[in-house]
Amino acid sequence: MKNDYDLFVEKRHLIDYIYLLRALKLSKPGIIKLFKDPKITISHFKDFERDKIVKYLSTKKNYFKNYEKIEKLFTLEYCNENYKRIEDMVNFCELNDIKIYKAYDNKIPKIFKNLSVNNRDLIFIKGSILDLDLKSYSICGSRTPTPIALQKTRKIARYLSSNNFTLINGFARGIDIEAFKGTADVNGRYIAILASGIENIYPPEHKKFVKYIVNNGALVSQRLIWKQVNKLSLQIRNRLSAKLSLGTIFIEGNYKSGTKWQLKFAKEADKPIFYLEPENWDNPNSHILNIVKNEGGHKINKDLSNLDEIKSILEKKYLDTNIHRRNK
Image (cartoon, rainbow, N blue to C red):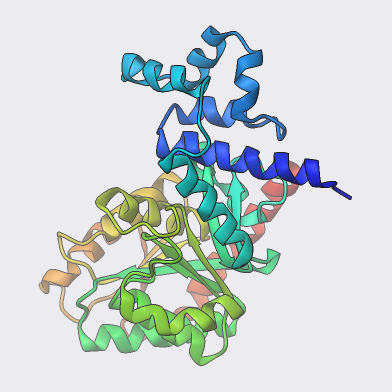
């Protein structure tokens, strides 16, 4: 059992890690490497040669700018505004059952071990992620879908959730939230990947679904908990959604659609991709579907008559992934 001092060091270690990573934005690989030691804190830096700390934490691109930041760490005042903001956030998370995981945390849910260490540098979770969530899939698509696409999305989600698949997606308007509703129809599990912080739900009208999600899955974000959405965080959201799930089903998206990022990351991770056969290939919302088709994606018939085949492809990926995980 940990004593008070051990708990103090553990919390300081976490606060310092987040401060360097998100507030000072120093070298991510260097911070991860340094903080692989669970007892390291900024106060230990004075025991190392400065050149060693500079080597770890600076980047070639911003060497001189970062050097100045690193120099200030040796005389860090823990009451400074930026540091205090991180400290308050960690305390808030502790009181509100929001779990924070660093890159090398041993207790990180298994599903995140599919990510590279750098890609899981900082993860916030509200709710629970279980081993059974490894059997997962993603549905994504347009925020302004056609009515028929909404109906089919809900049916696909109901079917896969009824077959014990966990849905993972970006919790966005349109297709994403309709897939969630299909999952909730059959009391299925759902993991919402947020582009905003967990305490700043976006879009705000989806706050009403949070209670269900926390009880039947989790909210997940890599943003600090009160942060707003930005362009990069939307891409990071798609990276998580694509790489945590076994495969992605694409249901409509025009040439401006952010679903192109989901496709990019799914292909990088060698995940199966699927597209719902559209009613009209000339509709602007069929743009993404054309790309997925040309990239060798598996077709879901417009009458949804081959959902058993789609389920079989995902189940095979699940078995292959588990075999690979056991052999590691």
